[in-house]
Image (tube, rainbow, N blue to C red; front, side, top):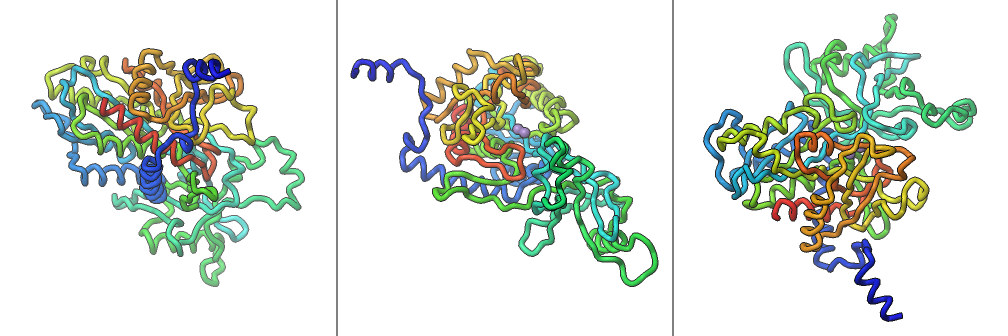
Length: 465
Ligand code: MN
Ligand code: MN
């Protein structure tokens, strides 16, 4: 029997629970790191807010805006960044090796599912005022009713001024809500297919109920709202046409569980990878290879548009770097690697049937390497090479990074994608790595502190290697 035990130790693969293998000092560091993340997540809920946060942090850490026309080579240790149209961020630390040795990229996204406010949103019905919404990303619509929502975004006004809107997070702020039907009268509603229990056009945001003075005009509640908005922002109804506003959950980020091992909050997907990707870059010192963190928008709707990963702005950024060193972009790109930093589905004991337990990520077992995503027969997936996974595996095993492997659920059940395939398309070795999430895309998502901390370490060791 002793021999079998010994042999098992030697031959079996095992992904341990971090709480059973991590030293006290590491757990203390993990808790400290979680505090910083929670403060970040509490305040930065949209891609625009994350971009502003990142820029401030980068400037504080000695990063300079990139000079896209530069023709002189950078020096090792130079730190540059670019904000892409207010919604995406690229930051780089120049390494000791020439750029022709390739760059190391950590790519995460900073957009999250939400209810966007429609371009012509404001209406009054039966003396109540509402905003029409248009959901963004994959949501279970019924989860977004009867919860407190905050309003975030910008309004670009007729006079050219852009005002930032952020209502509902500060104590004392009013909040907003999508109403739902009382169970007593929901007999017909509850017969609907789950996808339609709440229909998209029923996601109407309640924003007020007071009519404008004692007047005989119609739509007086709407008028009163517009009057309040005019007083506060100097805007008229027409200014909504050039606004980007969204309703997002107004829950505070909180520790979850008696043991406080988990974090609940809105938008872990994918800020729980974006934050570590950014902080790891700040701590990379003067790396061997040039290291780049890129935080993108629009992942939740397919990475389209000029702030999403399908846009060439990352390639242009690398091309500008290459030119400064007298190289062509492809000379740099073909030797480059990327960790596509995105969340994976954490195993939920309440819903065990949706995953293959041998190939899924568990909370507290560390950061999850995902060889491929996609759906069905790997359709639409970047299928990372064994060689690249081995490269990372050897770094992580050597440095004691707690990591595990996971697919996105049972093969026939569904699936999903990340930015990985758009980076790989450039001719870059790419693999997905990230934090397991429970209740992904819900208004309140859950992650484990250990997995967050190990994501940070995974990016750091990757940049350092
Ligand atoms: Mn994601
Ligand atoms: Mn997502």
